[in-house]
Image (cartoon, rainbow, N blue to C red; front, side):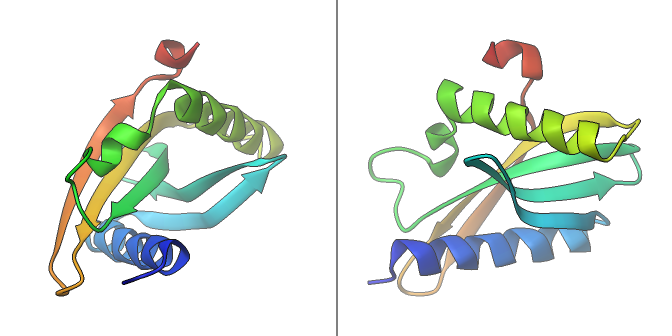
Length: 125
């Protein structure tokens, strides 16, 4: 059985590769501010926006889909880190919050779902 840390790292690698193939520019991985973290920060040059991406990887969807783990509390934490990132870098870009949901089985098969605009900042407060 794959450990949670290994599974999480694998998911983030898959998500990075996926976004790069879609034309995104990866700016940061595992950006930490205070005690919170954003998995990926990317720039979508076509949309001219910065994208904060939460990656959720599971080995089954038996109980819930991976993206369902991005609850209100997690959204609020992501938004706080995103605000700090934008403020500290003095960015003047629209921001978007995406979730990449991955199911990675032990047999090596995987499904990846990219949820663009998964939540809005005002919906988390």
